[in-house]
Length: 492
Image (cartoon, rainbow, N blue to C red; front, side):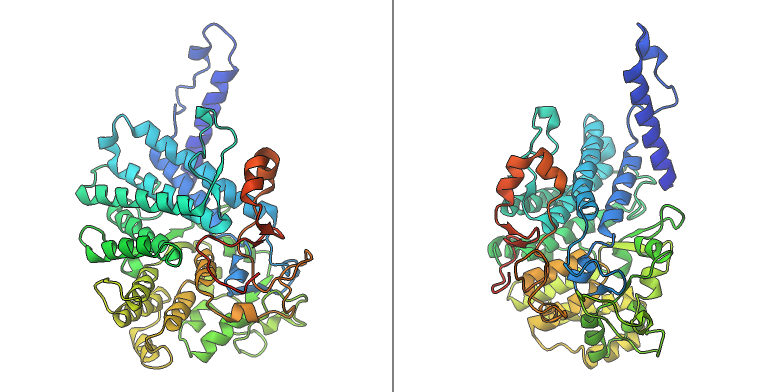
């Protein structure tokens, strides 16, 4: 099915090139391929966007280390904690390329919007997902002037995160209200690789993204955060959320070349990554039953063992270090997680602890969140019961919520890194590393993992004036000025 998307896209592109290349008086008739699409099929374009997003969202990009999950154990080129320009440049451009495709879906269907109501909903929701994903990595980005070339805007200004977040939350609320008023009858088609045409799940995703974005800004826009979360939680019939493992927003890969799950694809020819000592130590200390699914014991002695984040040198024997579990690394048709239902309930637990009216107690929301995470990992309910009665028992603290959320977000590395930047948990991330106080080799002392992805080189080449203003507070590519919503102190 993925191949069909590219066939359609290639056919449309070739048709356009032939049209432009003709030079006879009848060029339009002669150079038009009757078998080529005049425009991309909306469902094919949606599929292309979802696949492209998954390739970048699920890529091996250093966030797995910044989140405290996975470390390099060979070819120690990441001790500076920075990815390559190809990595972050591709992520940045993916947001804008995919938004062009989604805007095209909306433009194509605008005249007959009532007949394409559902695919327009999906396109609009994914636009907001992309903006949130991009700004959480880079900070200020082109937003209000982005992709406005047809209007003559060749060099887009960079908007503040406050502007971007306000826009995202406003747009998601508008979509949520429209969906509550009535959804369409059109089929999403084969390009809906996320939910296989279940528009009800897209509706849940819309409201779940509202919770994610709202809690992210709790320390800088507490009233907008509270009112958004209370509105969603206070009216579940109008604003349903992802609430079971089957609702998880997972992109499942086709499982044949070149559409392998990224970690599987990497493991076919390389073995450069092992588990972080931060993650292994926490799961062992908690006697967490998910450990046997998330990671494998070391080959040498059957013990779970991690390695240091940002180590300067490789272990003397890489077989002494645990690897990712089969479910996460050894499935050619494995998944890239965009959002898990358990995330919603950790957010609700935190909101309840803050005294907000969310229709559940913090303990009930926490219990549901942990059980959903256990279910995500195939852990029997009896083992989940034992965990919640033992080391994972509710203790009424934010720390317990944050640490459990961190475990549950495994493989959703960007969200775990964002959780850390917002909350400072797990604290061990700052306390790790055999290069104390030096998280970067560029000359300045840094006592924390990067605050952001570096801006891509092309922006400095082609939009220098605007990016120079946006990056004036950045130090050593990824430190200095933090995210708008990152209010931690004593980090540099």
